[in-house]
Length: 389
Image (tube, rainbow, N blue to C red; front, side, top):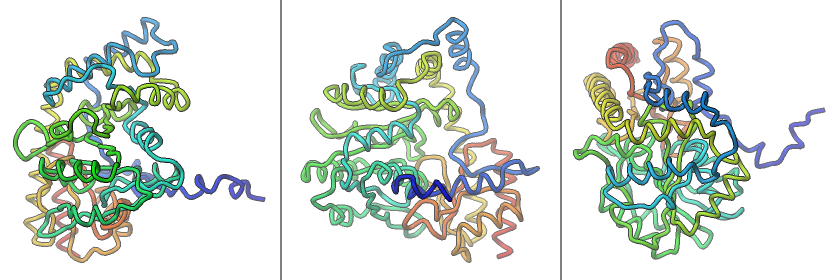
C-alpha cells in the first residue's frame, strides 16, 4: 500500500525541477563544466565568512529577531541608498531564509487559495510552483522572442488579467531570458497594476548584473511612489557568492511589517544570527566584490555568446541582464533530451528550456558566471556539438 497517495493534492502536484533533474544526472562526472544552476564558481569571500564565523564562535546562536537583526536591516537601508538612490528606513526590510522564501512569503501575503497571479514566461520554475503550492493559480504571459531578443507585449499582459487576478510577478533582469525592463516598461506595468488594483511582486535579484550601461538595471523603485502596492524579493546569493547560505530579504511597506513577521515566525522563525552577521559584512564591505563578479560575468557572457553566435546556428543575442544565455539552437526541439545528450557528449551541463514553462521549449540555459577560461572551454565543446547537429 502506498502512503504517497494519501498526501495532499497540492503536495503531490509539485513537479520535479527540470533543472535539478540535469544536476542529478550529471553531478560528479569527471571533467564536467556545470553551467546548469544560477551560481558562480567562486566561494563566499573571506570577509563575509570571518564575520559569520566570529559571531558563531562568539555565541550568537540563540533565537533572534523575526524581521532580522537591527544591524542587517540598517545595512540594507544603506545599500539601497547607495545603489538605488532611495531613502528606505530599516522598517521596510525583512530578512528571510533565502530569496526563494522571500518569493514564497510574498505570494502568501498577496494571494488566497483560488486567486490568480500572473508571471512573465519563460520564468524560473520555482515561482510557478510557489503560486500553485500556496493554492493559487499561476498564469503565464509569454514574452515575445524575435531577432534574438525578448520583449514584453503589454497588451497581452493586460488581457491576462481577470477578476481573480491579485498580483503580477515581474522578474527583471530575467532568469532565464535576460530580458530587462526599461523605465517605460516599468511605468506601464505599474500603471496597469494601479488601474486594476493589483500587487506587484518584483524579483530584482539581478539588478546589479546589467550590461546596458549604468551600474544597475531600471527598478520599480525608480518609478513608484509611496502607497504603490509593490513588494520586492531579493537574495544574497548572486551578488556575494552566497548561494549556499540561504539568506534573502523582502522590501515592503512598513505597515505590512507584522504580516511578514508572522509569516516568518510560522515558517522558519528567523535566520540564524551568525549568518546575518555575514550578510551585514557583505552589504557594508562587498561592493568591490560585487563589481568583480559583474566584470567576470560580462567577460564570460561575451566569450560564450560570441563563440556560439559565430556558428550561425544560434539565434540568441547577448542578454541585457542577469547571468544566463538562453540559447535557441537550430535543430533542437526537445530541450530535455538535448540537455541529457550534451552532458553525455560534451561534459557541459545546461538547464533545459522546458523547465522554464511556456515559451521555453527548444531553448537551453547556460549560466556564465564562471572563470572565463572554463567558459571558453565550454563554448568550444558546445560549438563542436552544435556544428555536428
